[in-house]
Amino acid sequence: MATERTAAHTPEREAFYERISVGNLAPLWERLHALVTPQPVTPVQPAIWHYRNVRPHLMHAGELISAEEATRRVLILENPGLKGQTSITHSLFAGLQLILPGEVAPAHRHSQSALRFIIEGDGAYTAVDGERTTMHPGDFVITPSWTWHDHGNESQQPMVWLDGLDIPIVRLLDASFAEPGDTASQAITRPEGDNAARFTNNLLPVDWKPMVKTSPVFNYPYARSRASLEVLSRSEDPDACHGHKLRYVSPATGDFAMPTIGAFIQLLPDGFATRPYRSTDATVFVVVEGSGQTWVGDQVFGWEPHDIFVVPSWTSVSHQAAGEAILFSYSDRPVQEKLGLWREQRGNI
Ligand code: GTQ
Image (cartoon, rainbow, N blue to C red; front, side):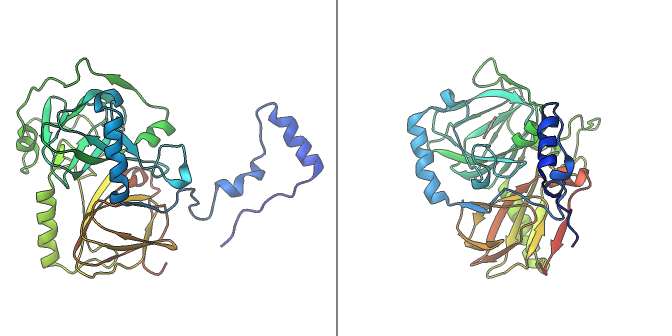
């Protein structure tokens, strides 16, 4: 494969570069090869967070600071190749959020879109624009850009979920706005279930038009996604690279449920080994059920429920399930597809 040539260094050239830098100029020929690479080059590293190791730190955080004082009591899953950058991939954020019984994470809104994937606990809620949804393990819950949201836990157990946000994308574009609410818990204007009734039964309110780029559905319950995977696993052969894999979509457009983040759920049959696969969207995986191992580039990660691992862009990934396993994942694929940048390669990597 052809690569860009690198220019020779001479004292005259070095002196020239020094002189022009004063005028905020730089020679592209010194940098082109590192910018326009023949294949994706990324500082993002494959990494895994074992929940059994992270959970004690999260519970300790629960003793150190309240959800109210922290606004969001979250431990960031920071990619080891992006230290200090608050990112799990170049484009996406991941964090584990803890809310203890009786606590409220106060209302605010911001340009950044968020997904919640519920890890542990049962019965806490997220409120979005006047309606609460009770969260259960495996639910995929969306907070669209610029919607008021607060979280509360009226159950008896700690509640932990994974937050996936497009913070680095909004940072890249310098497009962040944020605003705190007037009260910790927002006013509730619609009964729980109202959103599901309007938008999740293959029905839409008659004159409803999409006004924003996010799905109108704000909770995709695990019970339903799990049931779909169960049926698929009995009625079709697994895909060689993915097992049985579905994506979360907006019922109004058929597009990804969020404009900046694509979310997926897949079932790997008992003992199934996927063929190597790679794509340009660095992807965060959450183990929902089962155990197994995943090869990411030249590394292998053993996993069990609640573990989280990240696959960098254009890095080969293959999974081996020990029993039947379910993986949730998310990436910036919708962005790359809309920009015409997304690529994948199946097998033979
Ligand atoms: O729940 O609003 O993990 O604003 C990071 C930023 C969660 C949230 C995070 C946030 C939130």
